[in-house]
Length: 410
Image (cartoon, rainbow, N blue to C red; front, side):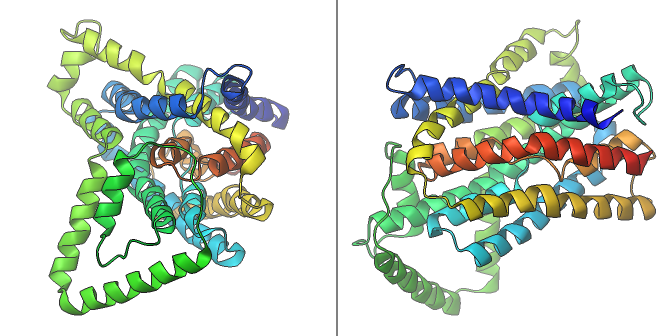
């Protein structure tokens, strides 16, 4: 498989995303006015509460079995490592480039959270269609590739709607603290700010002075010091676990959890999956709803792009920093991680499985980040601009790294 064929395979899904973004941008213009800010916010809530959970459930229940979960045990570890290394590199970018405080969570999310679902569901089968790959015959490659990609999407989706969701939510709380400098943290807790945030209408936001933010930060620091001096380690541990459980209760995470259960338990799986399943209509309906996730998310991202190109506060060096993390540092780390795991005997002898693990370090930022920024009303325009440039670069980056990965595995 030549470099030009790889470039075409990698470019097609990115081109699809960009074309849908252009449609969303046109719908959001004053000329069309079919996707204004209020409509984008309402559509985004439907994506969050309905489409994304259905997508998670449908793919997991249909393609992943209990045996797959056991035999592919290293994939969750690998995905966790992509988030960990991305978080460390994103933290370095923040310390070096010092973006706006409310954008730190967005930069961290874009650096650590890759698109491990939609792109892989397109790229892996397309690579299997080409001749000369080291992944065996077409049918076996396509079947395994679809299962690998679905499992990867579900695992990454769970991480996105817990860890990444928490990052974006924290940024939104900091922004709300900037907008309400008169409210003292001693009288308004973070929980109060969060409750107001989730019940307020989403829309454009403005940032107050940095002095007010520094005052609030200092008050929060003093409050945290007083709390830490009186609370025990056990209480802090329970609070941490409680927050993890709360983050896991988002609709997408619940959809992934239920999908895992139906896929792993054979009699539940036979109820909804298969031509003879008595409740096959449930799976078909859920799958139809899930298919709306990617188009709606991309249209929303394109609509935000129209505003972001005019008023985005993200600096070019910040975009370059995210690109350097996702397309230079992380892929190189991924090669070392997968080769080390293979040397230690942690991986099955399947080149396609190894290829999938490496590609997980190479994808552009997940589009679900755009859903989260829209949901909390923070950094929507900046997120769309980052997505635009990272997906443009991804067409070339995925092809080059894909060729390197296959050369290593040949």
